[in-house]
Length: 398
Ligand code: ADP
Image 1 (tube, rainbow, N blue to C red):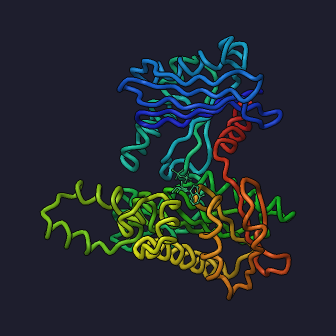
Image 2 (cartoon, helix red, strand yellow; image 1 turned 90 degrees about the vertical axis):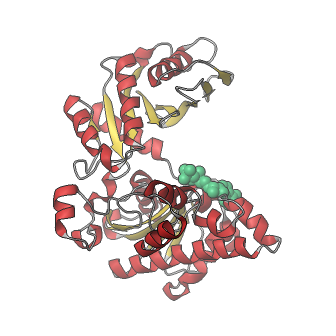
Image 3 (cartoon, rainbow, N blue to C red; image 1 turned 30 degrees about the vertical axis):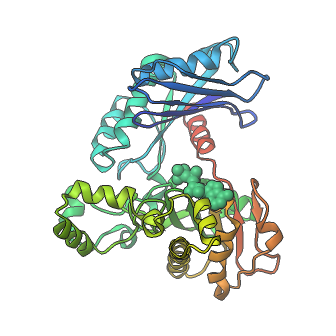
């Protein structure tokens, strides 16, 4: 059984074809500049076929999907003989609102419900919907599943997801904490339980997804009970370019002082803030590490702030769950930056965390980086959102 996983953005489309017997990726790729001019990079990972990496006209997402199918099935670059070998398609969808607490098989009713969630994610959901429509157009009645970034967080209790604003904003308008990166938190927490050889129902886990965008989740007995992103992915930790938590009064002050409208203000908070804004150097943690090593104090301050916030939010989740058995680091920074992991773990001395420096130096594998005696276990687990999407699609469709 082979499943195509699609992650459609407004002008890009990432894909993987996964063989579900082995869970190996057979091919992966990226369409870029859809609707502008177009570029496709297709990488076959089985059969010794060459990489395709060319400019190619991609006026709409439908042409992009058609180009992907063409490459997946072509004699020169292909990994399957025909489209008939693709049993189902799994789509990443950013926002499922309160309607979707788990993945669903896509039909016309689901498409209508997705449209209803669009105001919550006005940049992302329309792109995801366009990708699904394009796939349905090109692939006909191949079964398809939607997997939501928000779904895993739907188990949060009201005390964690409510904002303390007039209740009608929740009741009438859906204003609440939704959380994101749910597919990643779900994957790494399940994997952590496997690595610990314990049922997830018996574990309290803090999952730290630290990439360009970062969020933490408190996972008690396999269920998310709190997470740091909110109504939008802007809040929680300071991120690459996003501000994280901020007093709303600051927004009013800056807008008044500099004559900005709300769109300009939000552009600053989304794109020019976070560690980029504080350091003035970069949103990339490798650049920050290098600049800090050369004595750049603002780069060091940005790193210190990030580490402090991760530790502070993680600590609040230990309190919320009344304990913790494991802490997980994942995503670009979590998987690759041993210095960030070390700096954050130093805050966890009160939990009896001890880091094994040799294990912390390894990369690219699931690994426990705490010492065998450490009271709380600390893991690095490379995330794999595509595999979760493929597994859900298989479970629902096949
Ligand atoms: P996204 O949120 O876009 O999916 P990723 O999870 O791919 O992002 O993470 C990207 C981040 O990972 C970048 O900020 C990059 O600096 C960071 N990163 C990648 N490799 C390293 C490394 N070796 N050391 C520190 N940071 C790294």
